[in-house]
Amino acid sequence: MVPDQAAALLPGWEARADIVVVGSGVAGLTCAADAAAAGRSVLLVSKDAVDEGSTRWAQGGVAVVWGDRADPGSDSVAAHLADTVTAGAGLVDEAAAASILTDGPDAVRRLVAHGARFDGDPSGLLLRTREGGHHADRVIHAGGDATGAEIERALLAQLRGGLAGAPEPVVLADHLALDVLLDPTGRVGGLSVLGPDGRIGVVRAAAVVLATGGAGHLFAASTNPAVATADGWAMALRAGAELADVEFLQFHPTVLWTGPDGSGRRPLVTEAVRGEGAVLIDATGARIMPGVHPLADLAPRDVVSLAVTRRLALAPGGVGDHAYLDATGIPAATFHRRFPTVTAACAAAGIDPTRQPIPVAPAAHYACGGVRTDRDGRTSVPGLFAVGEVARTGLHGANRLASNSLLEGLVMGERAAEAANAAVVAAQRWSLQCAELLLTPAPAADPAGRAGLQAAMSAHAGIGRDAAGLAGTAALAAVVADTAPSSGRALDRDAVETANLAVAARAVLAAAAARTESRGCHVRTDHPEPDAAQAVSRTVRLIDGRPAVPTALAGV
Image (cartoon, rainbow, N blue to C red; front, side):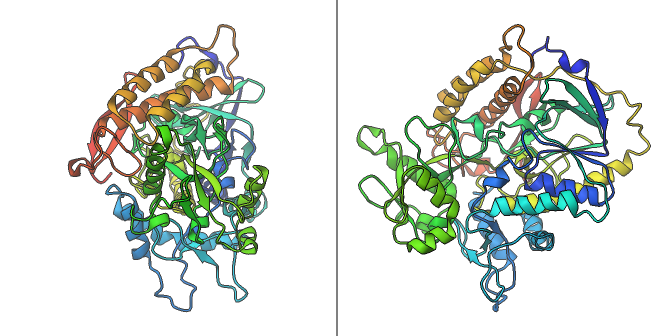
C-alpha cells in the first residue's frame, strides 16, 4: 500500500446491496444465485467478464460419490474421505472434509436440476473416471473435458433467469475490488471498487463474500487465467483476517509445454488423460512414475510434480525443461471424444496426441490454503466470508485431491449464501446508510516489479525451496510492495494487482520459511523429510503491515 495514494478517500460513486460477492467462478456464482433466491439484494463484482475465471478452464470433473450405480456399494463417502486425507499429507481437517464430501452429492444434484448436463451413458448413468489419488471411479465430467465451462454455463443461466421471481443480482463486470471496508467496530460495511473508467466507488453492504479464486500468477507460468493475482488474500489480510496453509501451492504435473520462453497462462492437460491410460515418460522414452508411488501415474499431484521435476534435473547438465505424456495407447476416436479441449490445445501447438507424446511440465495450478474460514465460509472478521479457491476450509490439507475443488465450490457457495443471509438479518438494526466506513488508501505498487517477483517466486518458492532462496525472495517482495507507481500514474489494475501479489508473496514466503520440513506441496530441499511435530496448520496475518506467522494451530 502506498501511503500517499488517497484516491479511495473520495469515492466517485456509491451503491448499496445486502450482500456483495467478489468473483464469478463456481463458488461466487453459486453464492450469488442462492442469496438472490433467498430475497437478498446481491451485487456481483467481476474483475473481467463474468465467464473469465478459473472455473471455465477446469477440465477434469467433479469428484463426488453419486450413488446411481447398480451396485450402490461400489464407492462411499468414507472411501472418498480416506483418499482426500491421504492426499492431504496429514493436514486435512477430517471433520470439515467429511462434512463437505457428505453434502456434495446433493449440491451436485441441485446443480443438475438447474440445468447442468454431465456426460452419461445411454441408460442415463453418469460416466465416471479416475484421477490421481483416487481409488475409485468417482469423477463425473461434462463435454468430455469441459466440465468447468458447463458448470459455469448452468450457474450463469440460473443467475440470469432462473431465480423464481427473485431480483436478479446486479453484475459489475470489468470492475476490480480494492479493499473490504470496515466500520469503527471492525465489522464489514462494504467494499471499494475500481471501475473501468478509473473512478473509484463504494458499495455499502452488510456482508462481503470473497470468491476471487487463486494465486497462480505469483509465478511466471500457471494454468490460471490472468485474473488469478491473489486479490482475495490481499484484501482479507488488509481487513484483519487470517490466512492458513498458504505455503501449499499445488503445481499441476501435466501442463502443455509451450517452449522455453512460455509464460502466463498455459494450457492444462487434464489428469483424466492419465486416468484413461496415458503415462509420463522422459526424453529417452523411459517411464517416470513406476517405483515412485504404488499408484504410479495416478499418484497424488504433489508426488507426480516432484517426480517429474527430479527426473528433469537428471537431464544432461540438469537443464531438462519438459517431460512427455504418452497418450498414444488411447484410441484416437476415444481421445478426441473424451478430451476435445486437450485435442484443440495440442493442435494449436502442432501436436497430434494420438500419434506423438505431448510435451508437458509442471506449472502453478491451485492454492490449497487461503483465507481461514469455518464450515460456513465465515472468516474472523464479522461480515466477511470467503469461498472457493481463495478460502481455506481444511478440505485440501497440504495437497488437494484431484477434482475436489469444484465440489467444494458448490457446497461452500451454498453455505456461505445462507450464512451471509443470516449476517444481513443480524445487521438490520445497523444502518448502512448512516454507518461510518473507514475508507483506506487504494493499494498500489509499481508494475515494473511484477515480472521479477514472479521469476523469483518460480525459482525459489515453487517445487523445491530452501532458506536462502525464500529469504532473498522475501526481500525482493518487500521492495516491490514498497515501491510506488511512477509519479502522475493514474491508479489502474496493474498497479493494484502488483500490490496484491507482493503482499500475498510475502505471506507465502513467511509461511514457507516457518515450515522447516517437507510435506505435500511444500518441498524444502534443506529439510527434505516430514516432521511429525509440524503436522499443524500455520496461520498468517498482518502485523505492523507485514505478513507474519504468529501461530501454528492443530485442527484449524
